[in-house]
Length: 54
Image (cartoon, rainbow, N blue to C red; front, side, top):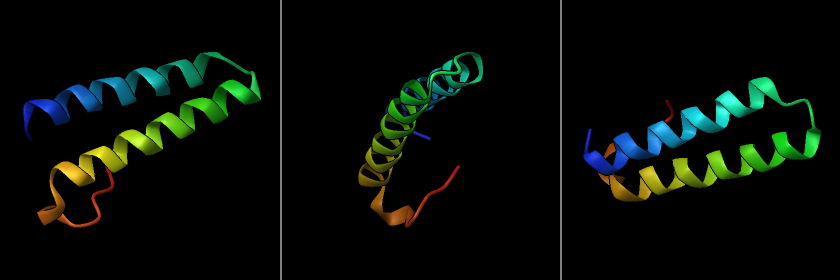
């Protein structure tokens, strides 16, 4: 895994950590949206890996 993907994974883990501790639905939705964008960024970085899902 490249260094950029490692950083993206750390950010995704942080957003998931926030979701576990916050009950506000709008915060959950915002975190989900950010996670989706970051996962798309990982796919764009490595299109040869196809549809990557952690």
